[in-house]
Length: 452
Image (cartoon, rainbow, N blue to C red; front, top):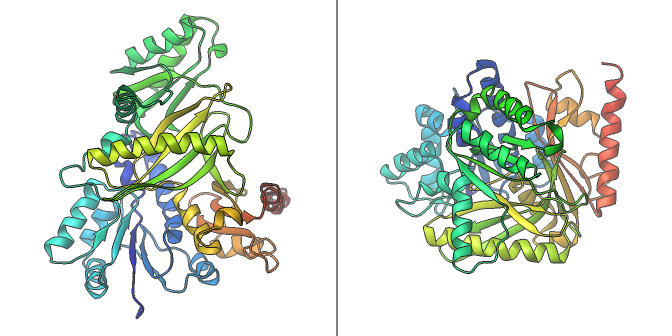
């Protein structure tokens, strides 16, 4: 690779959730979770622009790399360690060949940026090792010195709510639901019962879940009595090892509007000068509140809704910056039936929308908001038989981007090698047209599913 490299992407997705993954007692379930996070790391091929190296836990299939080159990424390479468990950063440090390639690339490209999914302890060790070797580079996701602990603290359910309460105590107007902090399962059950007695539904959350994992919805109409509730909740909590470690949050379940703006979100980037909102979007969630994908672009959010969430994000970004955090974070919101916008979670890392935003910006330029709508899904199930990326792209030939020579269609961003699932982004000029393309995608696989 002779051209200048601007970025080295470290796709340490699974590494960010090492603690909760390692505490899954069932080995098959633990391996399944690791494989899922590793599969999703292929999305990071679309972070930033061109002129980059993407280090992933495993080789990205040639078909996906070729697809990226066809849509304008001319100077990209995919590197990967020879062995991998959960931690990609640790695997890089143990792979002398890969490590030497990284060191040479950093040395040959002045001003190069290391971009991790999350600033973890393992990634910090990788950064320290490289700097001790005299290498000069910038990390775009690095808290100020002695502030690394903020990644875990602010990314936790408790840390986020604590800081929101501090912002409110200083005059910030941020709506929050009623909540309790619980130390153990007994306190979770007692808090859930308190909401039930008030005829309110609630939600229990572990301190650091992900993608709906570690979230338990408790809907008041699902139980015949308080004793019935206590019995069933105890059974569910004790049956999942994820609930073995506190603290926990139990808060009122906000019933959302049944419209296109039930769960908006946005991403913020903090550097030494400012906290800048990079994008706003609508989250797609199922009836259990589990994250499916996002919708961003033209007319995807009402102007008033966007104004509300951006105002809250600026206050949160200011607070995080003062604490010493630097890098990316997002805030997820829920819009109540009364139109109140509640911030419910922050993810102190890059997120499931980062690749969508960067890919959209790459294809449509900095004024992409006026040109396109992007719909993403990280979990499109296509049947029973696992297909290669090449086969999937061939089957989607009539709707692949650019579709019929126009700047619309499907970009496949990751393919799972362990189950029949792939991740994608669909582009079109309107929300209605995006859904038409999605319908064509479904038709292609539904027809085939009849024969498998």
